[in-house]
Length: 110
Image (cartoon, rainbow, N blue to C red):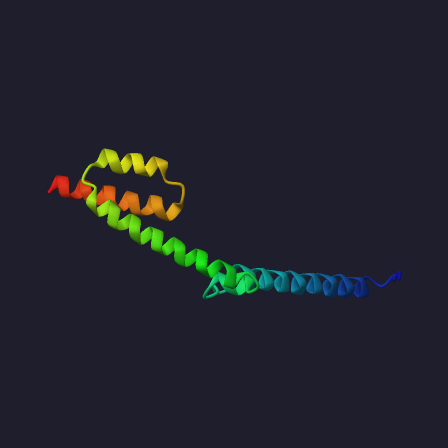
């Protein structure tokens, strides 16, 4: 609606600005709550339907990593470990191999 009263126009504009400011604050609060949402204790909560199927795979992976770490302890050559590192596909495997390389290099320095 049109109004000729300037004071009324100012009040309307002020009310509109206030509503926009409140809306922006609410949007910022929702973004902040999403951004800083506490981590869930387990990613399995997201996909409960597939969890029973993935559990044996995870246990199998843990067993393979334990066997790999025993194998790495027996290796005393950085070159052999580097070859294993290049051939490894999984992140956790590479992580274990890099740790073994660091350990060997630290022992060489001592």
